[in-house]
Image 1 (cartoon, rainbow, N blue to C red):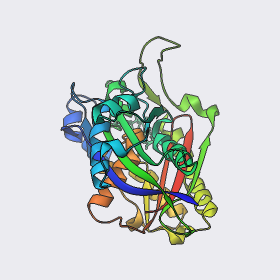
Image 2: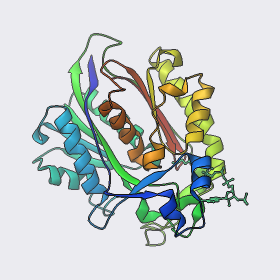
Image 3: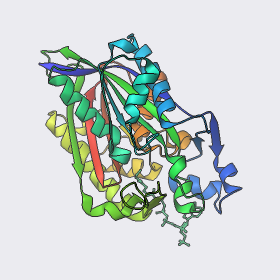
Image 4: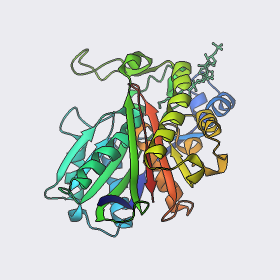
Length: 322
Ligand code: UT7
């Protein structure tokens, strides 16, 4: 049996870090409101020279180094983003060029905040097919470019960044050994209108700005995330009690708390970075993962569950023996 093993993680953030207080000087909001309703304290905002591709390439370099590989070893790049550098070519191919990889398979996946989970399932399937051997799975975003800075209900919630993971195909006879044990994805397009961008190539011909009915999204998020984590664990023959760490999409600290409570998971097992990074969409899960790997919490052989939900709606979970 071929298994996709995580052999390295990496992340990158824009240099500029913006506090709630700084935002409150431009927008009718307060540190108190943002912290109480979301848990967010800071977000990083990309400067003119920092783009989704540059952040992704920096995260990828760190992940490749952590895996002890060189860029030429990579034969697949799957990059999740809703904020590509250009409409085309795929940002994945820009990252390929920045890494100096002469030949590989490279494409983008668009599932907004769930994009990294979608990219993980796609890369895992390709590795297990036996055709590709070493994949870079990246989540990278510059949501600051699609925020309406006059809309206080959305502009305080998001940030920019990138996270990456190296997956390597390895033969494994151990059903509970290291690697991706199960993935589960969903989409329900009936909810397109609750979280979307009001522009696009084929409609307005503009990039557009993010729009969200936050309370509605919140309500669906807790139910869907708890359900999909149980489904993915069930596919792996496991239960929430087996989990060492949950690495959730970082949208709102209250969603993290409510989802953990639903599954009876102690808050101490949930990796939280929303206070430092805000919601970085497809980047949030790999950013949180890399943070917890580098600070020594997540170690080899830990059982981790990644989960995310976002525009579409789309949502998903992955169970990994790290
Ligand atoms: O990544 C994709 C997934 N996205 C999410 O999961 C986001 C899910 N939603 C949320 O996280 C929350 O719904 C929000 C953080 C977006 C909003 O929190 P809420 O507790 O649902 O607040 P609300 O929208 O019900 O607004 C409460 C009040 C309103 O005032 P009134 O109408 O009660 O007078 C808002 O106008 O808070 C007001 N408000 C603000 N006040 C100060 C909204 N945004 C702000 C703000 N600063 N930035």
